[in-house]
Length: 304
Image 1 (tube, rainbow, N blue to C red):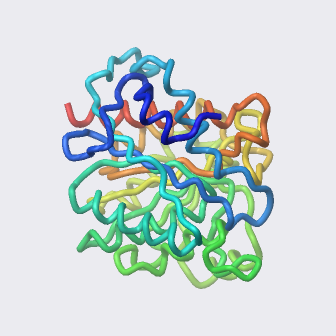
Image 2: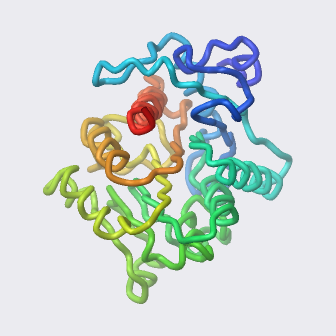
């Protein structure tokens, strides 16, 4: 696998849409957080950012709807790294705050799901009003702590609920969930938790799910989407640390994301928990790449 720094130097990234590392004149800023020390099960997600980038050199700058998005300018800011979790999180928080204050649409590539915590903290610092989070995942990630850690990948949305401009769990929406910890069930007894489980999604489909999200979060002016690749059934994305049977199909996820982008003011999104070493076919890597490309297409469609 190539190193991110080398790929950026070569410049052969993102289907020819890569324009360098200066985001000021770019439509989109993308950065990776190759960190997976906060997992509760299998590691490997630290290799996600580089693996996804490597697949983007030969792809055409087009969407599945046969749209040319080659005019998009993508600034790749490289990877956020550090000697400790705190250092990584502090850097990620600072960069995210900077991007949001600049009004820049951005994409983060993880890393385990804990790396969404500093991104949400950065958004929280940058805004002066409430924002919403759409959490697409097999798991709630609402644990107060997991294995003694409050920044575990199982605590992401619990930490989000504590942020000033999220304002509790009422501005969180969960999709594709099919697993819950006892701690999370206890939280749900005393707090509003808005969820479309994987089973319910299969019954009502993407269109009705989007309508439910709009009803709950439609009053907000800023929405962030976090996509854990294990929202997909392992048949579509096996390379992830905590796969769960009974997930979304790739078609369902792509339809869902299009509906969310068309209906809501999305300011950024991430794709996390892609673990290349856990799947020789690299299905999760290619799924992550496609999710990013299609979401960029949805964003480009809105700004034209």
